[in-house]
Image (cartoon, rainbow, N blue to C red; front, side, top):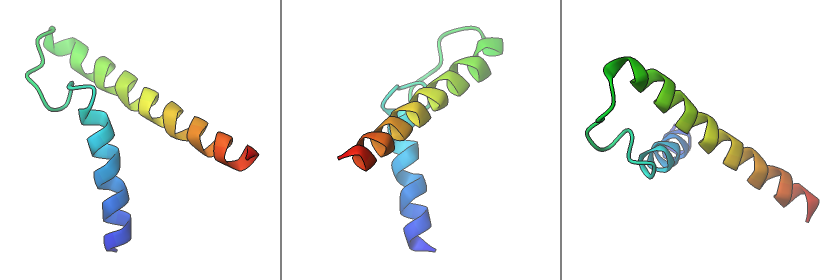
Length: 57
């Protein structure tokens, strides 16, 4: 169970590097969901590209 948790913690850390989830959100409230989903999509895209590149080596 701890190995799954560490994976989740690493993903949360990657999302927080965009500072949307860790700092005060300064846009309109109705934009928060759209922004956070975009950030999560970028993190996921980056993770998938890392996996694709590691398989081609």
